[in-house]
Amino acid sequence: MFSQTVEYALRAVVHLAAEAPAPRTTDQIAAATRVPKAYLSKVLQGLSRAGVVHSQRGIGGGMTLTKDPAYLTILEVVNAVEPLGRIRVCPLGLAAHGVRLCPLHRRMDNALAAVEVAFAQTTLAEILAEPTDSPPLCEVPSKLKVRR
Amino acid sequence: MFSQTVEYALRAVVHLAAEAPAPRTTDQIAAATRVPKAYLSKVLQGLSRAGVVHSQRGIGGGMTLTKDPAYLTILEVVNAVEPLGRIRVCPLGLAAHGVRLCPLHRRMDNALAAVEVAFAQTTLAEILAEPTDSPPLCEVPSKLKVRR
DNA sequence: GGACAATTGGATAATCTTGTCCTGTTTAGG
DNA sequence: CCTAAACAGGACAAGATTATCCAATTGTCC
Image 1: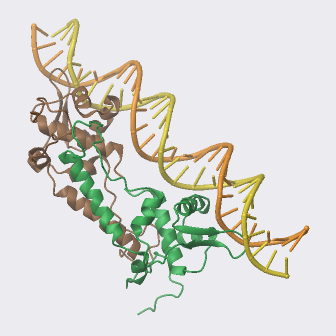
Image 2 (image 1 turned 90 degrees about the horizontal axis):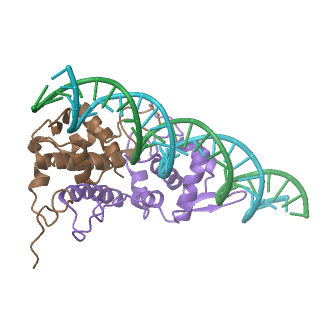
Image 3 (image 1 turned 90 degrees about the vertical axis):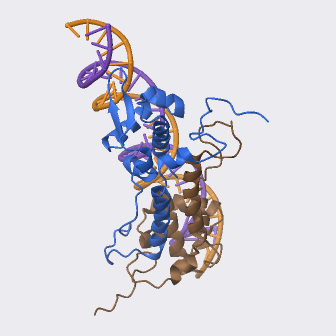
């Protein structure tokens, strides 16, 4: 249901947040997030145009988040690469009724609204801070877990 | 975020529910729901294979719902044509941790779960029964609204 | 059985998404 | 100023989604 592009964008920003404020190159992000790097490059370009990340060329350059992870929500990232597409007018094109959606599309939009709320409530900092067995990005932790 | 196929499938079943238990032909559904009929035909085939609708050929035939609209949920329809795709294992392919998702994918799956719940709670009968200015399917009502 | 109504399914095309490759441009640092 | 690092962007290809058309099949009714 979520596109690959959204998935990749989220992986990338989570990784950037984990390493913030140090810049990471596209190659580094691709390796860490298991995303094809040529395609990731395009996704990052989109994030850059949307102002979510900042790109710096040349030696020592790479990608950085433009905002503090504590204030960057998942929703902002998702909307940057591919807006959620809330249903605002009747998809049948019938302008017969104003902005009111029919019961079907109202329910569909409610579902989208729920996703929007869930995504708006989560910041990248929260994702990184969450105590869990699985490290933030599903990455293999740099130090292996203690075995019991 | 929802595919065209899902949109079309939902429109079709809502229309069928509205006319239930009378069968409707693909052409009739296409006209009522503003869906390209050749493509709708494919979508209905999918719904038929999934057992959501029943198809009957020949004169007087057409499509009918296999269940009473009071017991058919939006979720069943959506899953029939294109499963919601809940995230069950780490998309990075790392089986390093069991079924636990990392915080990012947990949140994404929570969003999907919210959609699932919203869709599971709504039956077609509820959609038809809902009092509203906008008729069930965004269709033009057969009788025009009284003007004030 | 014949005529007509309707779905089924195959072939095909247009468009979008995903992915790859390569060249150019910017930038830091010697 | 030269080199190497890094992003930017265009061209292109594969695959999936959306869409169209048509022949074949199944069914009803006379």
